[in-house]
Image (cartoon, rainbow, N blue to C red):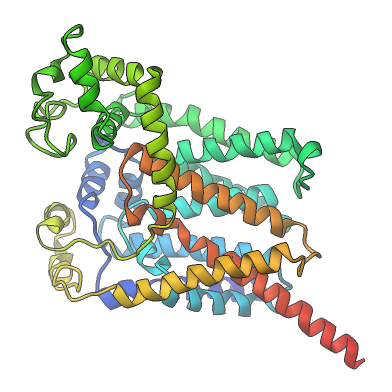
Length: 453
């Protein structure tokens, strides 16, 4: 009982550390999308361009009284997951110390605090990886902890459509590696049953997602606007316009009337032929026909995949933190905060973000150094066999790198290269570097003691 109370206090203290930048800002950070999430949760209406589940998270975890509660609960979840992660590798006597030291280091050298303090589902991309990792590799989890982790895993998938695609790629690559394990001599430190359990949870999530949408808003759907984002991506990659020039004579698509003067932004520009009527699905069948033709025509599909390939590497190394817009970009959030959290309006309006009194340049310089040192240390420690006792380390790094590249690929393929997308997960590199560093430190101390004895 005393141990449980101690661990609970440790997790709460860790969550407070992680919210440092929110306290410094004097409020939770908002993004232009935040307003949509708040409104969708309170109105229980599925937005055309995103899932509703993070909106519901905001509604109920705010206790319908304060957005501080939302980021506090996010921070508790993150603190708990990191706590369970460290407990996997260290003894009861040491893991608490390493855990707190790591939280301090991560808070002041990476964007972890910013991401957990932001009212968007970005932090759930990291939740997804840690729960995925614990389900696959965890050895010290109780039945209750496994249930909690599974629930967080499923809900993390629900918060953003990209999460399903990211995990699909990761699971596919792992399944391929597992099938080829004898040829490529890879040791898998987890049973196939664990992988099947993880795959089952993933399939269950895919089945539950449209069912939950139907129960909430009478819409049995998975995604309403994938075609719009892909059309925008084709335009952004300079593929759509040449395609239309070549095909509009034989196919009278609605968008052909605009082929010579398409706006730069096909999603949010009021003059966009795709969204100008307010109904993104009005010409969905034509959009899908165009997309299928592009992706099945060698000339255009080659352009698309080559651009996605090089943009993946660009996205992988684009991870500046602090994407907290100010000025007019905070208006969508301001409207919804004023409507549903009116008591917090003054707090919001005097926050450093809104007053443009916060600068992330120093933190980003530090983060670049931190990520670089993490990558170097992981290569040195793992590939020079400095840590052999725990067979999970090498596979951990491989799975993490696959996840980070999958995140980069999906984000730049369905959207644009934005620092925010990689910033939400890049801090996972230093957390594993710290775990391996502390493990190496323990081994060094043990060797010194053995020599002295």
